[in-house]
Amino acid sequence: MSFDCAVIFAGPSLSGASREFGPPIEMRPPARRGDIYRVALEEPRAILLIDGVFEDTPAVFHKEILWALTQGIHVFGAASLGALRAAELDAFGMIGHGTIYEDYRHGRLERDDAVAVLHGPAELGWPSLTTALVDMQATVREAERQGVIGPSDRLRLEALADGLYWRERTFDRLIDESTRLGFGSGCVTRLQSWLRDNAVSQKRADALGLIAMVEATWDRLDEPFTPSFRFEATHAWMELTAEVDWERQGISQAAYAILEHNLRSTGEFQALEAQALAMCLAERAFQAAGAPVQASHLDQAAREFRATRSLTTGQDVADWLKANALGHSDYLDLVKHTRYIQHLRASYRLSLATNIVRLLRSQGALPPLDHVLGVTRGSDR
Image (cartoon, rainbow, N blue to C red; front, top):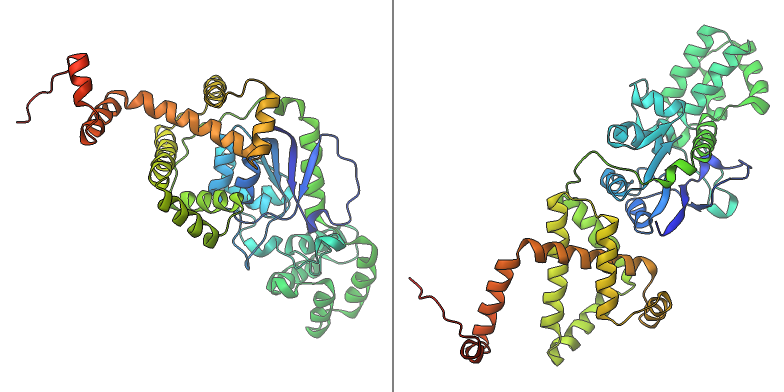
């Protein structure tokens, strides 16, 4: 575990919430497609998905959560998109928490937009500009519980809230529509007055409840998650990882085109391309085998990686990374790919030797070795 903390993706669900967090945490903005994968590469102890983007921007991909689980990372969800994803993936090991998660899980809630809100920017603390349907429902139910409205009023208000477009769903709009539709003036007046200090945020309650649960179990989360499923690397998943991995290099496509041209002109490109292709295929073969990356194998791969570069100490590694403008996640990737190559080498040892001999023959480099080693070649039939 290289980044021993909890990473929390949150925005409007925690807006205005003030509390101290026990475990070391890092707050991130609402998650979008690729963000869980990006964080999983840093190997945190836990990922808490609360808020995520919706509708206008690609949402968190299910596969990136599953992949994070296969890396031994504990993944939790609550309150908003996190509750929805947890209800969809709890069978695989994602842990959900709270009323909203339970409602999605048991089918009492089905609409994705039931948790959606418009909100302000991070600089202003992610203020909600609209109200989520789940919060409106929780509020009118609490109003009924306190005797502000009756059961029939509550049912009519819930139906009215359900019919409002999520981008326009506010309590002011709910009150206006109630008045327009002829709800009793006494009911509307009492509710409007009560709302000023009593509106319920189920999303915030669930988000804070999830954080409290993770705090209470933090020490136990030191043991990596063990998945019971086999991760399937689909074409869509490979596209996502390729996009994110390329993005992490910080080089534009135009700059790479110039780099490739220069490497081709010096004759260096072909060998680099073959090595890079071997890394890609080794990773795919390892994933297809369905075997987890074991810590002992990673240690062996790290020793091989360091030995080939004469990196004896931790400081040598740190200096090498700095000199080559690489980060810790890059180092982890390189070590993992060393493990993938080791796995591929062991799986195709005889075929590998056959192809090496064939390539040497094609380059005219093997005949002298035949003479020295007494190698004879069988006739082709």
